[in-house]
Amino acid sequence: MWYEISSVKEVNDFMEKINFFHDSCIKELKYSSGAYVNDKYEMYPVNDRRILNVVFQCQREGNGMFEMEFQGLRYLKLLPLDEMYTCEILDATMFIQNGLIYWYDCGGLSEEDLNDYTGTVICASKLRWRPIFNRMGNQEFYIGEGKNL
Image 1 (cartoon, rainbow, N blue to C red):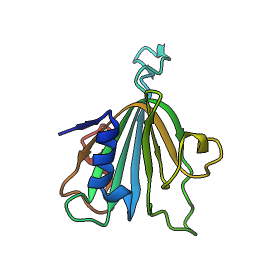
Image 2 (tube, one colour):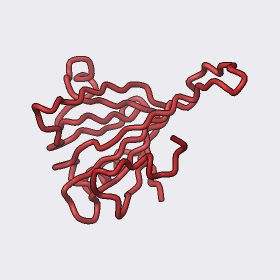
Image 3 (cartoon, one colour):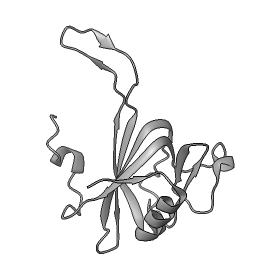
């Protein structure tokens, strides 16, 4: 079941439920633009979907894995650390401003930090999330969802 996040209260409730992303990591990302080429090689070149799905895992029983779906993606700045560093999230920032929802992989940030922040940032028009049960571990989630690959 998906849960919408569209108000400050829903942001705060979600952040508390998942302990502000403490001891979490981004496991996988999937982006759907809406553009495609059909079987006649005709292109539909319009980004009319712009949906980013992000799967997180954390060291917490009960909420150990969850997916966030950012709809109407406006901005994704992904800066994954290399194998010389760890990628755990100790704290995150999430807020709604001017009708957009922002997520940063670090706590205590604001929209003013967008251009200077050197971590991962997501900005979208809408957000929903869902818990995922019995899927912990390193097996790829989206392949396991029955996608044609």
